[in-house]
Each structure stands twice: as C-alpha cells, then as structure tokens.
Amino acid sequence: MKNYKMIVGIDVSKLTLDAQLMFDPKDDRKIHLKVSNNDKGIKEIIKAIKSYKVEAQDCFFCFENTGIYSMPLSYNLSKNNADYWVVNALEINRSKGISRGKNDKNDAKEIAFYAFTHLHKLTLTTIPEREIAEMKMLFTEREKLLKTIRIMETTKEAQGFIPKEITKNVIKLNAKTVLLLKNQLKEIENQMNEIVVKNEKILNQQNLITSIPGVGKQTALYLIITTKCFDSFDNWRQLACYAGVAPFEFSSGSSVRGRTKVNHLADKKMKSLLNMCALSIKKYDKEIAEYYKKKVDEGKNPMLVMNNIRCKILSRVFATVNRGTPYVNLQKFAA
Image (cartoon, rainbow, N blue to C red; front, side, top):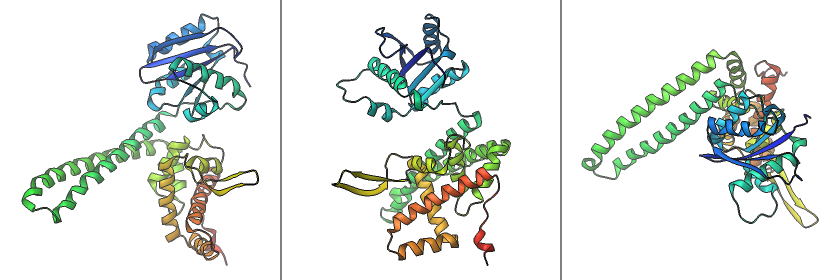
C-alpha cells in the first residue's frame, strides 16, 4: 500500500466543500478550510496542500458520495492524478459511534479520520468512461420520461366516469403532451444506441448479456452502466449483494434466530429489473421452469425460489461476460 503524506477528508455539499487536512490522527493541528464547490475552490484546496510542501499525488482524498455534487471534485482529482475514495455516506455515519450534534467542519474531520482508520481496505475510485457517464445520464432521463408518460396516460381513465364535454379538451391536450414525450423517449433511446454501436466493448457486452434468455436490452445496459463495463465488481456474488438479492443471516447468541433474508440496502432499480427478468425466464426457459416447480413442490417459499432465479441470472451474466462467448443452453443438447 502506498504511504501517503497527508489524508484529506472532504465534506461535500451543493455550494461548498469543507476540507480537513490531516497528517496523523494524533496531530493537534486543525487544518480546515471551506471553499466553493467548483474548479476554483478545488484549486484552493490543492494550493493549501502545497503550502505544506506536499503534492496532491502524495495525498489520499476521501469524501462521501453525494451524486452530482461530488462530480466536480472527482474530475479535478482525476485530472491531478490524485488517489481518492468515494465512500457511501451511511458507512461513514455508522462508523462515527455516538455523536451529539453535527456541522460540516466536524463532518470533514470525521471523514478524514475514517480514511485513516480504514486505509487497509481502501478501494481507489475512478471516474467512469465518458460513454458510461453519458449513458447513465440518458438512462436516468429515459426513466423520468417513462414515469411522466405513465402519469399523463392515467388521465384517459376519466373518460368512462366524467361527461365527455368536461374531459374532451383536457384529453386532447394530454394526448399532444404524451406524443411529444414519446418522441423524446425515442430520441433518447436512439442516442443510447448510437453510443453502444460506436463502442466495441459495450456493444460486445450487450450482445453477450442479451444472449441469456429473459434478459433484455435495457437490463443489459443498466448492468453495464452500474458495473462500469464489469470492472467495479469481481464476481456475481458482490453484484448480488449490491442488487439486494443476496440472503444474509440474522442471529445472535442463543436467543436471536431471525429469518435469513435479503437486505433493503440495495440498488432497487437493478432489483426490479432482475425481478422482471426472473418472471420472464421462468416462463420461457424450460430448465428454470422445472427448477421453480421442483423447489415449490418441495415446500420452498415461491419468493425465495424467485430470488434464487435472480441470483442465477447474475451468475449467467458474469459467466458469459468473463468467458467472452454467448450463453449456451446445454439442456437443448442433453440426451
């Protein structure tokens, strides 16, 4: 592991960055600065670090994942070839112990202390490739449009219950809006398809994943975006945990014996997509259909079996991507 000369904990908010510069947890010096959350502010942090005769490349930066608000910091640190770790805010919060009160300055100090005490398990964060970042934004916009279209289309339900002369104008306007939204949806999907076609790696992975029965194009794209072309996860079990389909034991001592179940801390969108894939594959894949029937007949909970199918899908996805060849249904060739 690299020996860093300084640890920098940064509390990220919409408008400001609170940075705590720390040489050692026992160091009494309280080096704190508050800057704007933009390129100018981030340069001020780098300048402050250099004033202690330390280069950004010799520092380790740690900050919470605050979505788009932490993106300027990620891009600037990558540009400066600095090592950084973007951590889930809940993980840092639960590591604090008992705390009374809260402010940004103290949060930055806690983040720096967290980085010091967890250096042994650090995972350096890298910014996604431009194509992945662009597809992520387009996928999010697509989800917004689909949700809006569904909301707008519910207006038609009033036709059978409210007199036509009342609903006529509203439904006419509504139809125009829905048509416009559907055209925008088509445009977004075309843009996503253009990115996929131009990038050989993404296109190849999409083709491999969609060769698996029950897995569609949108699920394949979401898996590619989330895993950064399968570079962010080492195996399917890690992804199953992230997606909320991995079961966990709940027990303590001799008295607590809870059910082994999945955890709610998960990527709910991925879990939803996997569930749709599982419903589809149960219908059209003979092997999975037989597996489902067998387990249910044995007395297993149907939802438990469905969760096993979700895990099987992830296992197949990783197998095809790592192998680099499409999915083969061996049951077809069985004697």
